[in-house]
Image 1 (cartoon, rainbow, N blue to C red):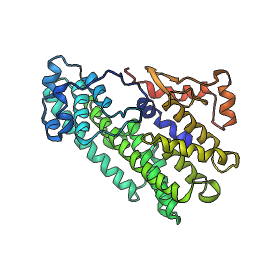
Image 2: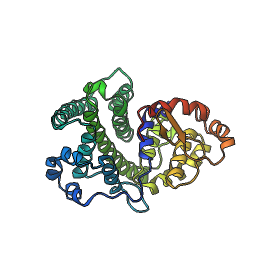
Image 3: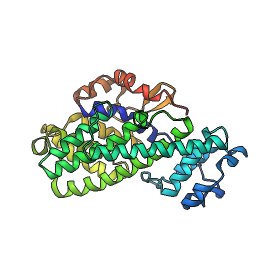
Length: 330
């Protein structure tokens, strides 16, 4: 089931909901770097670290720049991404030589990842999880005679391909140092954001022209893939709310999954600072500890999950996803 496959992306989802301090500001001396790729690439980050600067706080402040007042975050610009990557790497590197080695290793690893993505999109088959899910989607998309469903499946596969790399990318690029890995996670974060934005724009236009993807019209797989992309359309909350309204009567008609509706309901509720209903959204609060965001009816949450066809109790779900918090550092 697609929602089970989605569990592998909880680490990313949870990270996206971590709070960013309202007062976080990028130091004035770094602002030019956030606006100039060349300057961000050539800056002496290890000297900045040696001065006692809190690179972690600077990274938080950089993400603060991507938050639109009263709205969702935008993707990092290219210059911001370079700055973010180098701050993250310098925080991990022991010295300048290590910093330089880690940068080279990350570039080599990223090249392997891009070749892997290109291969998957052009028919390369992966038989190992978690990439098998995306591989199967690409294969099915290539064979689909419905152009609409074919494009949808291709996009859903790319969505999951990037997300699975947060946990399993080393299967493709091999083991790297913590600093090199920090660079790769930064690049994956921006690639995922850009993919989500592009997918949202496509899905929004398609739904406006053709309506929602229903089981009877496009099949269960396409309907769930469309939901997956709407679930990740955090850059357009209005569209997510529109999709939720479209799905609600279709649940009663058996045309869309009640569980998918529940996940999107919770996603929107949390984004709007309201209690969620089904306990699907949460965050890491300590190493190995995952907690759901506030619930509408804590005493009824398991019954509500069962009504919506969301597999497992909240306790079982928590036990499943908390492993993604093993490396949580705050």
